[in-house]
Length: 274
Ligand SMILES: [Zn+2]
Image (tube, rainbow, N blue to C red; front, side, top):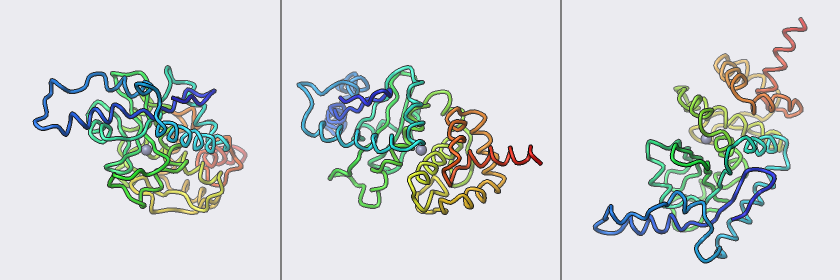
C-alpha cells in the first residue's frame, strides 16, 4: 500500500480479493455458502504476508502516473478534490471480481473496456471510494492494444474526476441522460475535464464524445469557442459550473486553449462589458 500525500489517495496492488473470488466463482458446482466473506474490506488491506513484487511494480507505476498528473494545473485541481472526501480513495488493479461485481445495481460504475475495465465506484456499503486502473495491460485479458489508452494518465485523471466526487454529486449528474454520445451529464463533465487536461498538456486533439475515444476535435481556443456556440454544450457547461466547485476552479485556468468552463466565464464577462 502506497499513499500519495498530501492527497487522500492510497494505491493498493493487493488483488487477493480477485483471486479468492475467481476461485469461488469458477468452482463447480458453485456453493453460495462458500463465497469468501469481506472481499470489499480485503481490497483495502495489505496482502497477507506482505506485498508481492507484483504489488510493488503496480504501486510504483501508478504513483508515477499520479506524479505526471500533478505536473499540470488541471491535474492538481482534480487531485485536490480528493481532500473533500471523508475517507481515502483507493486505486486498485481491475480484476476478475470487478468485472462481475460492477454489474451490481448498487454500484455506480464507469467502464471503458468491457472485460478489463477502468472504473470508479462507490456504494452505500462502504466509505472508501475506489478507482480501478492499471498503468499496463497485463496478459491474459481480452483487452488488446486498442485499449492501451485506458492505461494513460488522462484516463486515470478522468476516473479520479468521478472518484473524488462519488456519492451525491455524481448521482445528480449521472441520472441525467444526454441521449447522445456523451451518455450522461456526469460523463460529459468528466470528459470535459479530461479535455482541458489534454489541452493543457499540449495535445492537438480532444475528445468530442464519451462513448468511444475515436472522434476528436482540435484542442484549440477556436474549437473551444465553437464547442460553446452549440446551445446543448453551452447548457451542459452551465449546469456543471452551477453544481460543481471543480468546474468553477477550472474556469480560472484561462491560459489553457481548450477550456469550455473558461469560455463560458469569458462570454459572460464580454456580455457585461457591452
Ligand atoms: Zn467516465
